[in-house]
Length: 120
Length: 109
Image 1 (cartoon, each protein chain N blue to C red):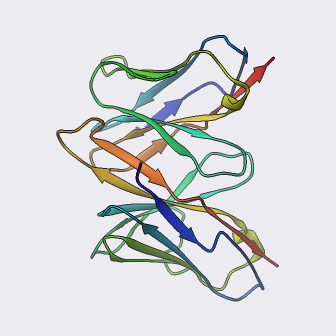
Image 2 (image 1 turned 180 degrees about the vertical axis):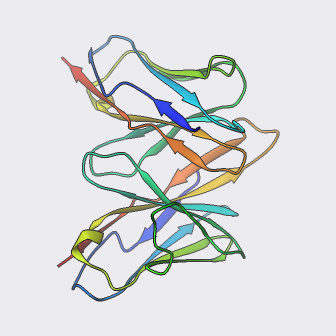
């Protein structure tokens, strides 16, 4: 199946610093990528939908100035957590959506392995 | 509104069959996904259904009834490694996913 990579896989940073997380689709083009965060023992929470060449669509309650998303190409989206605080510590996961009408399954969503962020 | 429900936890025996149900209410319904997630890892895609009926893929099958807003994931010949959380998610016409809280499946020997 298709592969989505994330970098870094884990990061520890000091409060107030910014952290950039990269999400790449390695062998396919993804016009749509999603960014999620997940707290321990909880379900995935969608943060934003990222479309190549346009501004990301943020979910209610997600601060767009704090979580900057750039979908620079059909294979790369980045999430930058600005001025990180301990409450931002979480597991951040990206995914890429393929839309292949006429095939089975028509749509698949591939997840990156996730980035564990710890803010001290 | 948008809503999706699935049981919180289920227990099954190794070698048996288990069915995990999911009900949804989604405007502009555009398909239903099932994912498997082991603790501390990202989810992995299992299936996508947009038409009514059963899709079989090895030991896992997924069923959809659009008229009833209902789906299930069927796992056969359960193995210990199938112990995980199973997430269902419906997609709307804007490609937005609405996630269930996940069903924790516990497999006992």
